[in-house]
Image (cartoon, rainbow, N blue to C red):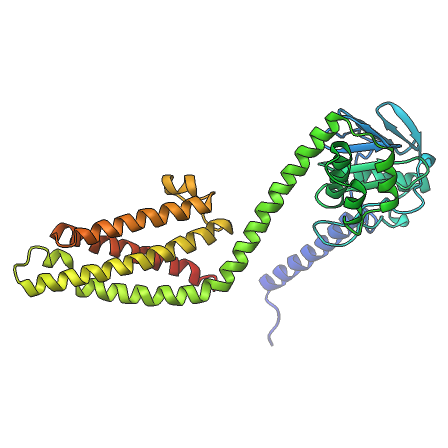
Amino acid sequence: MTGIEPRNAVRFARLLIALLLGGLLSGGVHAQYPPHWSEPEDLEEPINTERMFVFVDGIYLAPPCQIEVAIEDAKIVINEQTYGADSFDFTTDTRMGSDPLHGGHYHSMEMHRIPGGKSEVVLRQFSRQLRARMYGAVLVLYSGETPMLLNSLREGHDLLKALIAKGTGHQDATAMLELASDDLDLELCNRLLADFEPTPDFIRRASELVEKQAMVEEANNRKAAALILGQQISYPLSIFAMIVVVFAFGHLISNPQQLAANHEDPRVVANAKKATIASLAILALLSLVDLIWTLIAHESGTMRELNPLGSGLIDRPAQLVLFKITLTTLSIGLLYWLHELPLARRATWWCCLVLTLLTARWLTFNSMFL
């Protein structure tokens, strides 16, 4: 008769006890917080809005500006000016515009997830929204109106440009708002545009932020365009480079110039000269391929130029193209002019070998992303 060995029985009992303890501990941990509830936040801590643009009843509050949301006292303190929770319309969601990261709209938290009365609910939500959008955000408060909190990267950017245009007079601010994002509350924005008188400090701050965002957007657009172009030409360019590399390796192996450099046979020397001219043609093709791949890889952000001379020009593509074409043309012209000399033929052979290996490296890198 066979039965369970004592050793196995002990192991089974230990395993069963461990599972039971794990389940109890897990249940105890989950019991500490109700569903959909996280650890409490310090939502009443004052918010420094040095990087925000705050407008209250059409007046711009220059930094330093401090906002304190007193949830228990049901009030909002802005630069020591106290507003009751009923000073603004919190019956609807705060106007938030669209979410730049997820492409949708922010929605308020459900009432049952937050303990407390209605004023606590809306003030907690308002405080969270402020803390989530502190950098460069635009906050517009009007008595009796729903607060509008815009992200500076999208709707806030459009509103700031319109306000700057009113201050400088270079463009029609109202027309700019009409062409802005669909998520803007045009009625409230036009009211702010009519009431607000831009100050030199505001124009300076807003212009700096708008210019920085324009530079970032331009850089992102360049990277996106380079990625799209790279995807479009990567396959045909790789096929072309592969054919040239195979031909170049065969050509270099068949015509080792270091062996024919000091040869006295006229036919060998003549063949070496012809091979040198072919090497120069291969060198020109591979230089062009290297230039195209370098520009695309840098613009898309997938490589960093280590050549000190090239790194100084890589951010200016037009100058880099002009420099590379000029230098390559002069080098090929000089080597062709001196191709009668054994030393020039040897230098051409080695230059062709280096560029062939460089292109093979490009092929290895690009083949991983085809």
